[in-house]
Image (cartoon, rainbow, N blue to C red; front, top):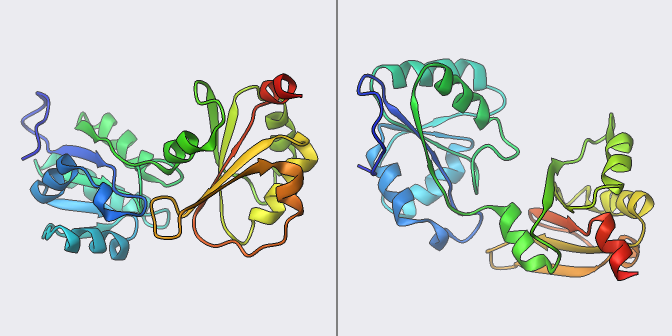
Length: 236
């Protein structure tokens, strides 16, 4: 069993387990031990998680936990924990709770007095920052931008942000997002990281003017890192 801190003996433990964002070799030994030891793994997409489990011959049962069933499944998982069963929580990839509903289960577990432990590991957010070439000492993460409602207001506010800005985006919306970023932010430095740790990993560095004007086919999961307003003034 993975080492835990002293906690209630009457309830199970909830482990928030980070998993690889692409390369399955990035899983930690502690993550493997924890996924082997718990009674159930709550996964955002059981099909994707099954690939990791098969790779490391982990036989622990899986149960789906996503935006569509988070209320119903959340109650079931809490009852399981209250009966003394340990549970692991994983996302599709990376660290649970970032752009997924997993924080709901964590909050419910806290309310019920369940001991919660982080099993840290990969994160697309931090991986993109480390290779962006932009300041990492202070940054703001906004996840996916709103598609319509609130998008303009948010972009106007972010344009004044002095810290490095990090976003997630999908391949079919990245070109529009780059155009919007150039429109509101002006011509700043930007790094676009896609398919991090996978076979076709690519990091494109440049500025918003040139990259928003390019016509190309985007594929894979994308993280965008944009210089803050302070960086723009310092470099101009």
